[in-house]
Amino acid sequence: MTRAVLDTNLVLSGLINPAGKPARLLRLAGDRFVLISTPAIVVECRRVLDRPKLQKALGPRAASASAVLDRLTSIAHLVSPELLAGVRVVPEGPDDDVLFDTAMAGGAKFIVSGDAAVLTVGNFAGVMVVSAGEFLASLGEP
Image 1 (cartoon, rainbow, N blue to C red):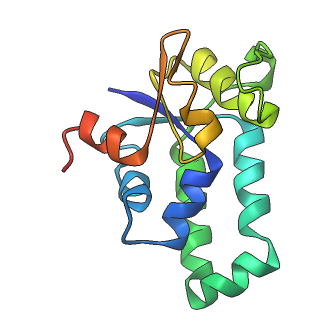
Image 2: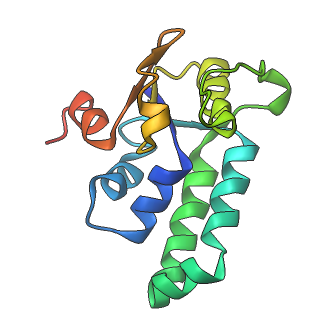
Image 3: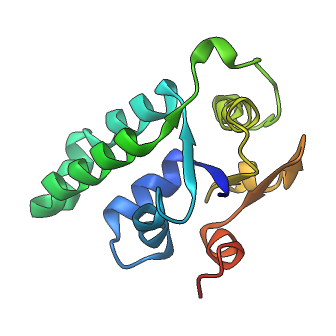
């Protein structure tokens, strides 16, 4: 089964807009592809989701968004931080390098992101960086 790392921005987009392509990917995780992550990515997702501004924007959907994040965390194959090599790939966003480290250590072929700086990398060490729509298409999803 295809292995992929989802960028924090993509996960949060999926939690905010349950009708968008990122939300469709969140629903497919575990069934159509193996979600690869690392504790640092999980912590970042949780930290951003717990921001008061985002909680207010989600309103009554905040609890269900938190439950979706809990489900994703429970099904994700977590790569141990000790396995991350510390690659430098994204000059404009060194915090995004963890995505590439995680993909390589976890055997993922894709990083799915909505971040322009990450998307411009295109391909690194055999890992393709794609948008939500492109990844859906690779899974045969319209």
